[in-house]
Picture 1 (tube, one colour):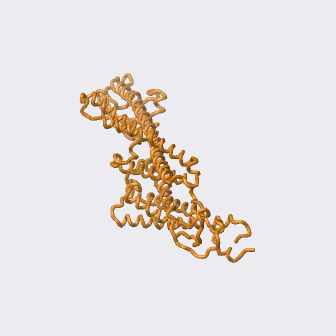
Picture 2 (picture 1 turned 45 degrees about the horizontal axis):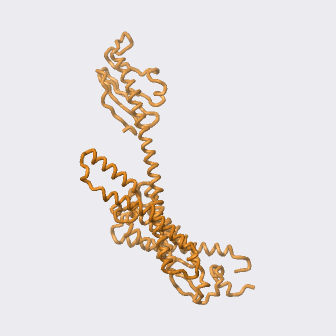
Picture 3 (picture 1 turned 45 degrees about the vertical axis):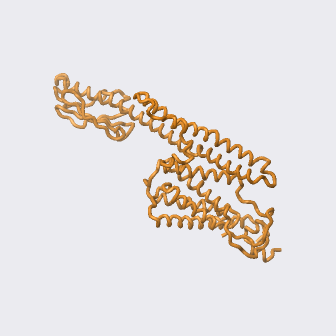
Length: 268
Length: 158
């Protein structure tokens, strides 16, 4: 309900709208861009029909076409897949997004802020066209800017995830190559050594991990636990200290062959 | 000296320096309906979409309650802003804008709020509730605006 006074006012006395015309134009452009973004994100099937999809990933599309061409070339099926449509699509995307959109925005914005609009009664047709052009240009420009925010975050997350995955794999390889292999070697050496020389005499029983078995840097990264020991079999578990809950377990048989590798935690 | 008519003026009329109120006419300012709808889209839908993209949400993996809290709380603050920002008494306008926004959510972007609405009763409930929340929040915004203007009124005026 809008309470207005029944008294008539001349247009000059009418108070202006609370929000300036420029803010309204940007607001409308933002609105269209937001709805386009939402439709693009939640309804991928509409990506072929909405104008919003024109710009979102021309680089990815180009990369996809390049990869597909490379695969075709590698497999010897060149020419069977039509790529001309992809080329035109990318070209159209680039033209619309990077040239047409900003051009319309700048020209219509310049017209709206120029002296033409300062006149008492600017030509209504040009004014309408300039407003529509500003909204369309703003939509095209914002349609690039808005998704760039989550896309940047996603790229950063993927980068972090790859880095973390590489660090975990590197740590796992380190433990496998140094710690597990060293315990296996040490245990087997103990087994084949005669009892008279301090060994197990063809048995794993009595094997203990001595303090000097590992270098200090390995001791800081992991702790080794003998889970099960019998004359012909020994099961060793290596717990990571960098990633709690992650461990590697393997079993050494009587001939010194390691098998039954099991990974827990983040090593899985 | 303060006249009797001054007491009958609302704070908005005092600020706008309008003549005394003689009769009232109920109209709808359609400009605020359109601008309010844009406000709902930009200030509520856009953060929702960006938040969902950040978290990678595309379905109702979350509990429904946080979604509903954000839906109505977000609508409340946008409706409050519409009521507070407008010079006139724009309560119904905010409600209409909220209704159009609800229609957009239900029929144009049905997956944004991550709540599956398959039956028409649910859709109607959502739209009507959006109208009610937007109206009430704009009304609260109008009250806050009037109180603020009352505080800012110069001495000597009622």
